[in-house]
Structures are given as structure tokens and as C-alpha cells.
Image 1 (cartoon, rainbow, N blue to C red):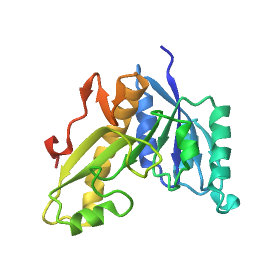
Image 2 (spheres, rainbow, N blue to C red):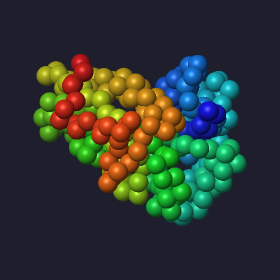
Image 3 (spheres, one colour):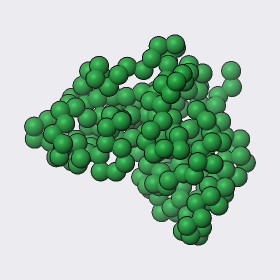
Image 4 (tube, rainbow, N blue to C red):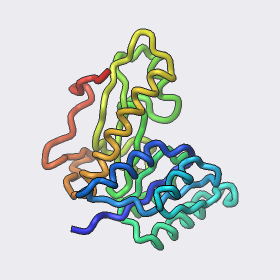
Length: 217
């Protein structure tokens, strides 16, 4: 079976992108990172991608003003040129239009630094600490038109320590992000994920509920 062609969309340092690139080097990994696309020319992840011999492309969103549809159309053109099968968002700080999302049903993944549906949006670690959460974590989910609301593919939980600040908590969560994103992409590329009634099944088994996750330190 041929490897799935993957594009990673970034806006910054691209640490999750780097984790996907590293995972895809493994013999037998079912996906290949063939393109890294950024909306910012100074995104740190672009240099990492180029060093790995991966094609990069920049589409500056500022040039499109408030025309999000035109920006998304420009991205779609580039993705089509590279014959992309799967799109992975990795710190891509742009809201996607419903029309663009509809082109990638169950073929576009996102990594989010919380145990969704808790703490959608930004500043997740700060909000988790302020809420007194005992458990925090990361989620890989399919992208839908609603922000951070698509079917959950994989989650990992971490215990919140008494002396945690945002930085310490974020570092532990990021470690888990780098573990579960390559796993989620592998499962998708191998065709092992099915969505029924808005929920993912992996090998026919429902993804575990958040409450049943065992927190990692």
C-alpha cells in the first residue's frame, strides 16, 4: 500500500510538525510528510522542514485582508498541486472557512492542548490552572467547521501538579502531543478510523471517554 501524502500547516515553531516528520522516517510508517505550508514567512518550523528535505510554501494571509475564502482557496490550490491526501494542522493560527473544511472530510487532523471538549480555544494551560483542574492533556481530532469540536481520535492525560505553572504544565502536555499526533496520523493513514454518529471508532472500538484516561505525570 502506498504511503499517504501529508501536508502540515504551521504558523510558528512547528514542534508537532517536527514530531510528525521524525515519526514518518520510521520504516513501515504509512504516511509521508511531503509539504509544510505556513501563513508566516518567519515561522521557525519552515527551516526544520527544509533541513529535512521537505517542500515548503508560504501564503501570507495578510495579503488577503479579511477575505478568508480567498486565502483558503490559495491553500487548496497548493495542496492540490502536491496531491495531498491528509492535512495536519500543527499550531496553524488561522480559522478555516466551512467551504475549505468541507473539502477534507475526515482527512484533516488538528492537535489541541487540552482534553476536549474542555478548554476549547486559546490559553488552555492558564485556564486549566485557574479552573483548578486535576487532570489536563492533549487531543487529536478531526477538523470540522466548528472550532475544536470535531470527532476525537486520540487523547492523552497528564496530572496537574500542585506547584505547576503554565510553563511546566505546557511542557508535560507538549511531550504527550508529540506522542499522540504521530499515532493519530498512523491510524488515519492505515484506514483504521471510522466515524459513527460524530464519534471515532478505532479498529471498531470507540475512543475512550476522557474520564477513563489514566493521567501520566
